[in-house]
Length: 268
Image (cartoon, rainbow, N blue to C red; front, side, top):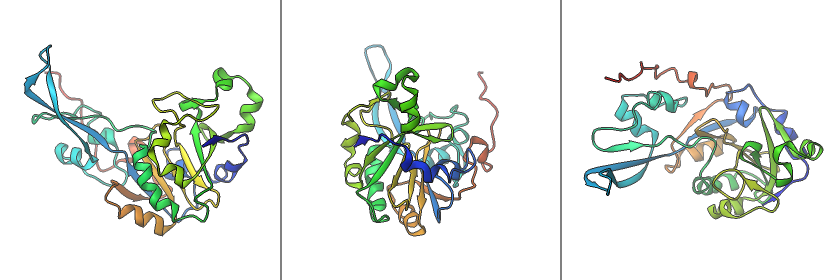
């Protein structure tokens, strides 16, 4: 993976940016179909009979959960536009009497292990699997020479002006992204501000523009835009908790119309 010096390869997608907070506003408009992949949850069970030296119950086991498990426990409804803060009652209901508790899903970060699985679907849905572009929002990292807003001329030439999220662009390939260890390898001239070495995959697309993968910084799900065949193959893959969505769908918290807000939990 290497940092690109021109943002021109992203101009086609900027021209197709949809309305903010919609599927098309994150992944671009005009695709045949769209899938929404919910970011998985990390769940932990404590054992009250086993404590550490401070008397705190130890974690007995940890698992990866789907959102559907939280919906089941909280009497909520799973549907394509489901929102985590509605499932969890604004994170008031994320632990249960049986000792299980669940962490909030990651915002804006698509796990490289999950991306590796997704790449199996993506690579056969493009004529240019060895010529990909990765976009990383500047809030997740910058070249050292650009920190603090320095070198504005170079920034304006190299950054893709995605609405609300200026992006640095990188060259990559399906083969590279199929190996999840790429995220721990440093990219020359790049410093990630998060916990991995490589850039965040805020956007990914192939040179033939057959599809887009979008992980918006403030969303806990990833959108895949592409052909009907691509989306159907992803929806059929049990690895993902995925739903079909449409380019005009509202994925803000208020877009979840099936899980109404609940009153704050009483302190007493």
